[in-house]
Length: 210
Image (cartoon, rainbow, N blue to C red; front, top):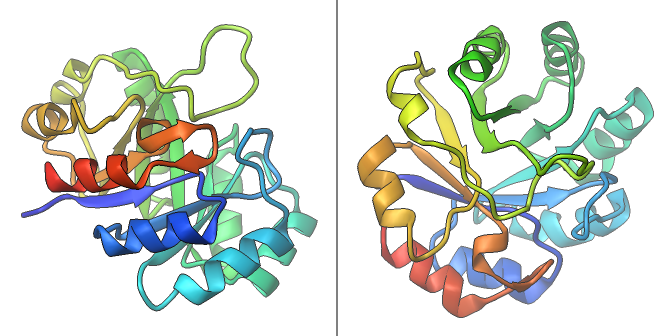
């Protein structure tokens, strides 16, 4: 079965159109989180709403407060909220229950211990996303183009629905699929010419390898 694809960090209508044209299943928008790809709620709403019929939309946030979540739920109305911060299991469950929305929980991993810690979220998140840890001292959570040792996935219990992120590119996506059997692949910087500016050729090349 073809793995599903999430193109994250979208900022331009033409890039959204390209992502949909080449088969993206999820469209990720970074909302009010520290990133070169940061959007306001209003900007994310304007970009994402026209695309909702073509793909699932994802609001990517980091440790969001209730005011931000209220705005995202009311205005953007995404299919998923992706929590990419230090949210506790209890907080993830609360957000899911309060806003009646599906949750993607990102876990930064580099060791088996990290994978073990991430297991606690499997019961409350609809999708677990395993991403590489950011460089030491870096406060931006994702989009660094770094991968982690995929071998740790072989020795870890994985939920039924999970996503692989971190350093994926058109050049290594076929290897990633063969080695991890990831049901969802999440890519951002690997299909960019510069932060936030997607390359339509790279998106096409990425999805052609699936």
